[in-house]
Image (cartoon, rainbow, N blue to C red):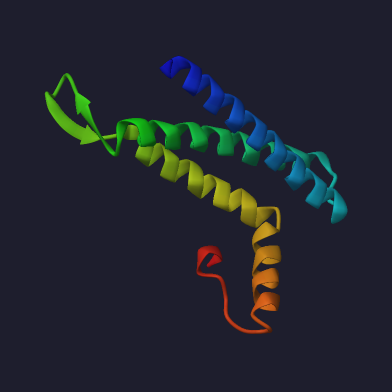
Length: 121
């Protein structure tokens, strides 16, 4: 039963990642950024997203602390640190592909010319 649930989640992650990748590629194409370097970076971003989603599932299932048999103690779940590292790499790619500037512009327009989005700073 649990295996079926994991398979369903994996399929959902893959479907969402494929949709994300296509959305990124569509946006890049609309901006004329169709050179291979941009396409590779969009695919890399989607791959990182897949990895982060899997790590997030691990944290959701096992928690932020896990039992270490060797130490016979609770330790930090290594998935937490890896997820943070991947999120930082994703943020750099997001910024480098120009999506951060687009998001800031959209947030500024929505605010009628003022403010910024703290998530994008």
